[in-house]
Length: 112
Length: 115
Image 1: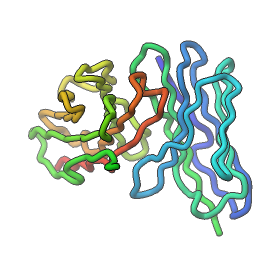
Image 2: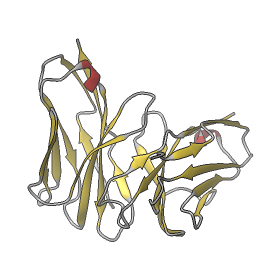
Image 3: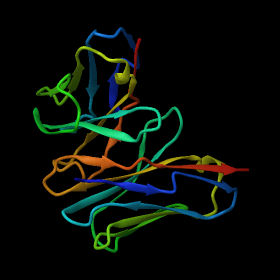
Image 4: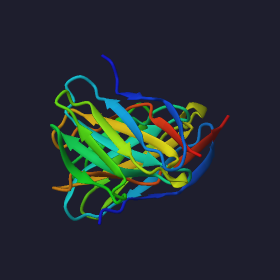
């Protein structure tokens, strides 16, 4: 069973703080790990897709790392801004399963 | 290029009725997945289609069904609606056969309310 867990469930930070979230997934039969940002009243937007152990990706102030051997990924936001307020979803796809399973998300609130 | 289009955006149905939701993927995308989101829940996997074939189905009752057409457009159908089917239904398309390799582009969703 492919079970994806995210922590924390929600996070309140001040503008300028740096923060990080965790995504845990089964390390066996791993194929790909996705991160999405979902703002209120919008559609989830892809941030990163990672497939290789040790992958690190960066987009502006947001970066992500992947450890497939121990089954976790971290998403980092440097210098949080109010516009970063959103739900951050991670999703995992295993080999041969033909389905991508999402975690419940981390809800980030950035206060100005 | 046009994004993923879902219709209708909003829908109100009565218990016992059936409903059909439509999803048009990005041109050239052959993989379509459907997800359900209810309050307090994450995205729950419903189906994945590729080239008109359902490749996997989530843990939903048989009242939930779907299909994909030769132009990659997809529909999902829910029969004998229950109050608990009230949710946001999201469609996502991918250009990769393995879907997971390229990430998804999501539609705006269909908000279904069952009364």
